[in-house]
Image 1 (cartoon, rainbow, N blue to C red):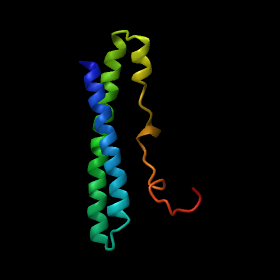
Image 2: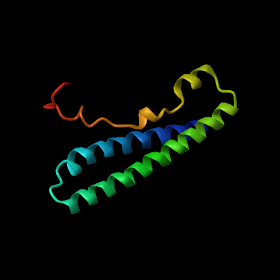
Image 3: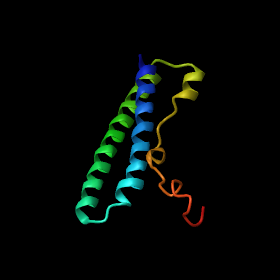
Length: 100
């Protein structure tokens, strides 16, 4: 049961991080007026809240799994979630950017 919860949380994290990158690329960079930028940033904020929620679910689920003394394969598969892993890079999405 814990493995299923952890897998679902990781899957949702991937989806929301991709959505966040797409929002940056398509909505924030394309916004011409202050009203559109404000609306775009509110969308990013809601996606970030979902990312935080699923990261919290994964962390709590992993903590419960560790109490059950998992095997070596589970330790390799369900590693601790680092804050750097929740950040996105929008520069990779722009093939014409300088310095890549």
